[in-house]
Image (cartoon, rainbow, N blue to C red; front, side):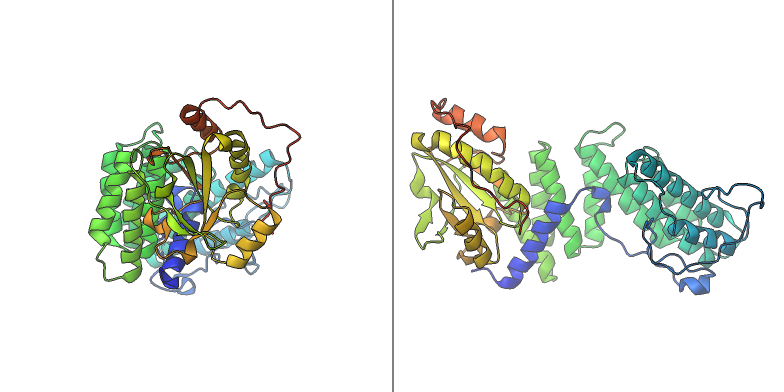
Length: 428
């Protein structure tokens, strides 16, 4: 049985792969001024990002407007560097006054624009670089937020930062901005977005970045990118990245890095499954031995899932529907639960009984999930009567389409009166 430590690391990878959204939020690089902010002449907000509910201490902002004129909170004042830092603190305390989505988005955009302008004023001021560093970090973080809300000008702004920071003699920020820009370009290249650089060139740059700082989180990001490549149909590139990762870091002295690199090897094995046989072995929850190799002559869905995974639980309804339609024609399912809590799984199945067997992966001698580098659930793999994998993504309508190809049109219809189990999609 794999050690609990290995499973703990693996589950962290699963969670990262499941939650990862924007690639530019990936490899984290610590950004810090060489001196405390107070010594630099100003103390920035605890988080350089825009905080709608910040708990930072109230700062006394200088008055920059005429008493008779209405105050525009987003009008960046002229003044000393200290006064502009004080103004930024007032922005960090700002809150929208409306719940209307459009007005809230306009508020955020105006706030970001004002923050950017204020930071730029500080960076352009004739003061020592130490006093500018907090503004430099704020500017980078604000542009990252702009990327996340889809500001079309954010990428152009990001592209100017490496040269700006190098000119200002801020090497840490220069490296951080290069890293974020590289990951944004990678995202664009994977999905073929307008203006994206060639994918092979960006992947070369990404490999260099990971080699420069091979920590567990950066290797986890490699796995997330492998998933994105495979999901977008770029399987060859995904396999190449897997092979490079295992070869480069498989013997790392950092045990966690080496472990995750080994998992990438499993991912490579999974990506090459179509047209090949798949190994699934273990004991079902009721203690019976299971071996997928003994199921030849049946079409089998290998269902990786977990009770805490809402998309997994929702997908069960689709599998149940197709099970009802095709089971008597030779369709079976084997569930592989990656739950760590056996009691939670047993309680789930007591409430919502499933008509197919379930393996608890944590009790397997060799993990069926780690064998194939399954780092995100649900993962549904369909195997034909000859034991060969047909597809790695038999979810939603795809499952029914593939079953019709393999078993012919079903003569049955799932009546509307058939009640599917009331699945616990809340995770409670």
